[in-house]
Length: 108
Image 1 (tube, rainbow, N blue to C red):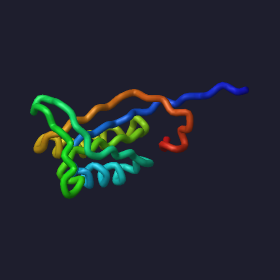
Image 2: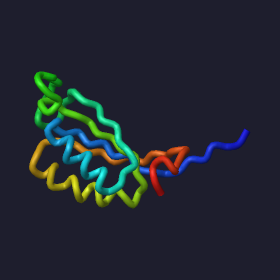
Image 3: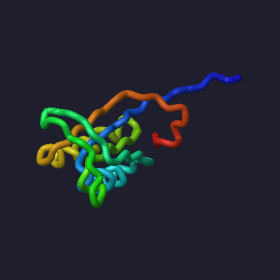
Image 4: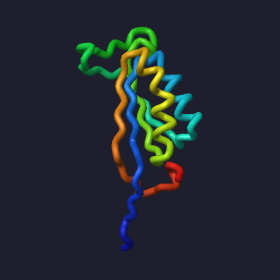
């Protein structure tokens, strides 16, 4: 059996109010991220205090987490695109080192 080869990538996680979800996903599409995962209706505690998930009438009233795995060269354009949003609105962004076995799924 052959060895599994891992390729370095970056994982970006963005937590924002649901109303800002289209901004983030359009940015990821614009930089040609191959895909993303969205987890809706999340809760957490940060420097603004506790934010409970309250799914009332639409997802726009709750927080969402959008995750994408991208090649290293796409990180800076994503960060530059997110900067205006995060300067004006509450939210969080995390960038982590990850490794993937199927590099072709995430671009080169």
